[in-house]
Amino acid sequence: MSLPVGRHPGDRTSTGIVGIESVTYGVADVSRGARFFEDFGLRPLERGAHGSTFGTPENTTIALRDEADPTLAAPVEPGPTVREIVWGVDSPASLDRLAADLQRDRTTAVRPDGTIRTVDPAGYAIGFRVTERTPVRLEPITLNTIGEALRLNARAKFYDRATPQHIGHVVLYCPNFEQQLAFYTDRLGFMVSDTLRGAGAFLRCSTDHHNLFLLRYHRAGLNHLSFGVESLDEIMGGFKVLSERGWQPSWGPGRHYIGSNLFYYFRNPSGGHVEYYADMDCIANPELWTPEEFDPRAPEALFAWGGYPPPEYRKAQWELDADARAGAAPETR
Ligand SMILES: [Fe+2]
Image (cartoon, rainbow, N blue to C red; front, side, top):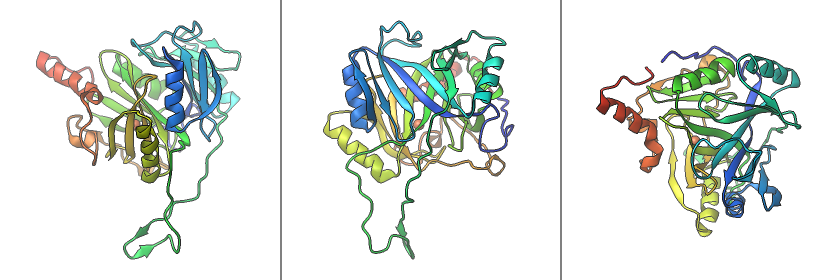
């Protein structure tokens, strides 16, 4: 796999893309989807018969819309799923440059709110607009370790629930994997943090280890959307509320090796899974980060601790196994 590692030094992309601004799901049951996201810890912004919108403290949003809404882009898979991912861009000038570049070879449209819409090579509807995010600053958490106590004369910070601060990343199954990877890196300026040999690429457009994780698969589909919280304690506060209200975890708790983040995944009635994550690697200076290529079948491709996930998290590996059985060369090297 030839990868444009380190092509864009600095903590942001060459195109000015800074992160996920909003994600829209198309669902059959808006009220059930809304109940889940509220229990998950998002703040309801508006609610109606045909849709609900939720916000995070950084001012990014999740929208649930009736799956029959004619303004939604076509779904990439049956059932409830993601219908649009909008990426925030740092300035109107960056947005204009991005729009001009995309118009060279693809159909684009502009929504009344200024969002530029198009479709990526795997068929996902994507958009771009000038970001309205407000950086979240929380008091640092102090830990007492052996020989080094930083939290003095005070109890630990406890959480009754989670309040996700940040939409961190989205994980997408991709047909035309090479083409999809080239689009996000060469055209949109995403940087490669780590890869799974022949199976996937962790990409970032910020200092987060990944904002987009592309997995090779023969059809498009959403694996998960991930939300940043403060700590393992806050993750467990979220688990407490979700489990009390009958929502099912799908993997975790655990810590990933790639990206280092703590994780806990839940089935999302609006499509795929959602993840609470905390303590992800922060790549402030790409010159000091060495991307690694991992064996997709090795345990560290999945976790440092926390155990194996259900099979549905391992579709990219099934694909490699199917290639091997068929004696076919994988699409990527
Ligand atoms: Fe994740």
